[in-house]
Amino acid sequence: MRQSTALNRGLVRALRPATRDFVQLLYAAAILLSIFATKPVWANIEQRLAHGKAPTLRISADGWGATALDDLQMVLDAVAAELAPRFPQRLLGTVRVVYGDGGPLAFYDKSADGEYVIRLSARHARWHQFVYQFAHELCHIYSNFDNKTGVHGHVGRSNQWFEESVCEAAALYTLKRLARQWQADPPAPGFAAHGNTLQALADYLVNEPHRRLAPSTSLASWFKAHHAELEASPYLRDKNEVVANLMLALFEQNPDALGAIGYLNYRADDAAQRFADYLRLWHEACPEAQRKVVAQVIALFEGRNAATLVAAANAATAAPRPVLVARTAD
Image (cartoon, rainbow, N blue to C red):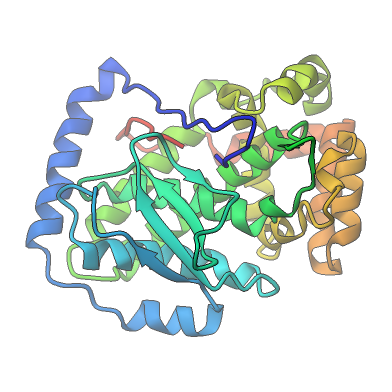
């Protein structure tokens, strides 16, 4: 979620009763692992940061609960190292990360030092939440979210729902990528188990029933029915997440696709356009390597190739793991 002068809102989902006891045990285990695990081994992350031109993260010391700051730095650096190489044209400098109980947020206004500011609400070494939240908010920055012109003091948000969907897809993508990395080559001793937790959260989220279109329903027909709602209220998560699952499938099919996010909202007035023009301008702004995925997105919303792409998205989310994890605030 991002901050708007008209709307500053963070949504926190309640835990589902069927998973509450499990999640409490999971959180307790995460806290113990953070306390007793050996200090992080930085070599792999430092190597990726050197090549990825990731931002420098300045993390506030307060508010994180039972979370070792060295471990938190390692985890958030891992997220930045995963995303930054996709956006070589976007050098963010320093990003300040602070705790806040109002929900995760990327602020339009920079700090007095000229730094981007991201607020997270995760605590107590819940690394799956930290990864999920930070990837979503960092994606907003990479999507040129602060490049939008305002009208009468308000930033236009008619297409904000789509940016939310894209950032949700990027967060899921990052969860799955880091899950595989940590399971095979953990960034510190003991973090392989946290890779399993990241995977469990990703599986749980992508398999929520509301995220999946019926095979007989095209995105074009679904969008026609819900477009007005989305334009009026961009934080309708149950609807944003339908689009997010389809975007996730596209990102996973093409290793260059995620970089297209770096050309969203490319011109200052792009975000104020009609949605069809918003997508067309996004396509025009992209280099050739990223235009394919944007063309696929346009085809989805126009009803072309919809059955094939929806089937691919459903197939990618059809085999959840047996462990479920309650969702975090996003």
